[in-house]
Amino acid sequence: MGLLAGLRIARSSDPAFRRAACETSDFYVDVPHQGEIVRARLQDGRLKLHQGGDAYLTLPATEFTKEQISPTRDTRLAWMQSVLHCTHYVAGASEQEYMRKADAPEITYVVRDTIDRSDEAYTELPA
Image (tube, rainbow, N blue to C red; front, side, top):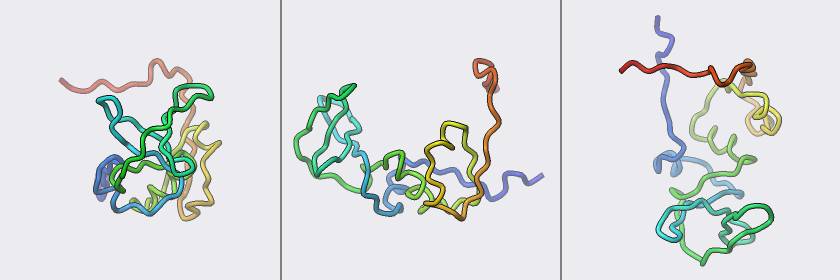
């Protein structure tokens, strides 16, 4: 039927995707901390790790590359669109509330149907 012809799968965590994305001023950085990779937010030129509530841990200064950057919720749409150039975007109600559609006016936004019984919303994969 050709319904998926031309479909491209992209992962925003892929280093090539991140390199191709536009610059963004509000973002997180994947950095090593205590033996694991954490996502710290760059605020006032410093990397800060959220500890819950109003508590933040300022991490030591470290160099980072574009491949480590992930945008915030408010900058994500324009950042992703700079790579994907999509024509349609399907979003749930909560995403529709915060999405800044003016950042990508060329997209047709589609409101996803409400999932009444989300505990039953799954797909069985063949073994």
